[in-house]
Length: 503
Image (tube, rainbow, N blue to C red; front, top):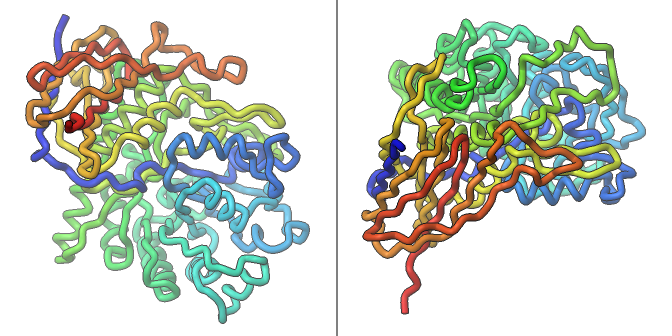
C-alpha cells in the first residue's frame, strides 16, 4: 500500500485566515428565500416569518458572511420593491429565473435575518438594468444615519439605525450572455468604475467587488479581468470569481480532483491582477472574492426559457453524496491554500438551491452531506494558513493528467496554539498518511474528524438526515512528533492537535 507523507513547519506561512472566507449566498431563486429561510406560518417560524430551525443550522454551519440578493436575480431587481409596508410592495416577474417575485421578503427583512444568524451582509447592486444613481441611493438608504431622502426613507420604514453594510458587489456575472443586461468588459468596467466612485462618495468606508469571469472556460477569460481592472483598479478592493463543478460532465476521477482546477483558476487570476497592478504602477494588490462556488449537477439544469412562469419553483435542489462532500472539503482546502489572496468566499447557495441545508415546506430542515466539511473547516480553521509539503501517490484523471491522491492544508491558531490539518483522499484505495510534526514540540493529539462511507454515492434525505455524517476517531499518539493515520477511499478529514497541558 503506497503511503503519503505530510510535513509541516510554522515558518512556512501563507497568510491569515480571513473569517469572510466562510461565507454563503442567499438569492431570490427557487426556494432559497421562500420556504427556505422565510416561511410565515411554519411551525418553527418566528413572528417575522423566519424559520428558526434553519437559523439554528446556519449558526451550526459556521457561516460568517452572506451575499444577497443575487446572483442573476439582481440584474433585473428594483431594491425599492422590497422595502416599506409589505402590503404596498409590487408583485414582479423575475426575468432571471422566470419566477413570480412577491417581494414579501426584502432588504430590511434580510438584514433582520442576518442579525439573528450572526452573519455579515454582502450586498449586490443591479448594474444590468439599472446604474449609478440607483446603486448610490441604495448605499445611502443602508448606511447613512439620517438627513437625506434615502436615509430618512429607511427610518420611515421603521429602521432607525443604519445597516452599515461594508461589502458591496458591483453587479453579477456581467460577462455572461445569460445575464439580463450583459455587456463587454470595457462597457462593464466603465460603468462599475463610475458606480463605485459614486457609492464611495456616499460612504468612503465601504469595500467594492468587481465582477470577474463567470467561470474559467468563458471565451473572454483573463482578457475580461485585465480590461475590467484597468478601468476599476482605483475604485475596487476585490475581483470576483465563480466556479462550479459538475460530477456528470467529466470522468469521475477528474471530478474528485476538482480542486486542481480551482487552484489553477485562482493562480491565473492572481497573475492577471498583478500584471494590471504593474502596468498601472499601483501599490495596492487586489484580493479575490470566490463568491460563488460549489458542486452543481449543472448538466441536469433546465434553462429558464424552457420552463413556465411559476411562483417559488423548486430549482436545482441537488441531492449530495459523500463523494460530493469530499470534493467540497477539497475546494475549501484550495481556498485556504490561497489565503494570501482569496479573502472572501460565498458557497452558493445556503438553503435548497445546491445547498448544504434543505427544507420541506411546512416540514423539517436537514443537513446535506456537504454541510459537514464546511462546518468543521469553519470551526477549526483559525489563525495562519501553513504551506504543507505533501508527498503522495498519484492517480490518473482524464482532465488533469496525474494528480496527487492526497491533498492537504493546515492552520495554526497562535492564540490557542492549536494546529488543524485538513486532508482528503481523492482516490479509490485507502492511503496511510504519515504526519511529520516535529517542528511543533509539545503538541498532543486532539480530535480526528473524518467523513468516509463504504458507499460514497449515498446521501442524506428528509427521512434519513444523518445517514452521512462525520465521525470522531481516536487519534494515534505522536511518537517523536510523528504519527500515521489511515485515510479511507474518497474521504475528508480534519485532524487537530493542541498544546500539552503544563503541570
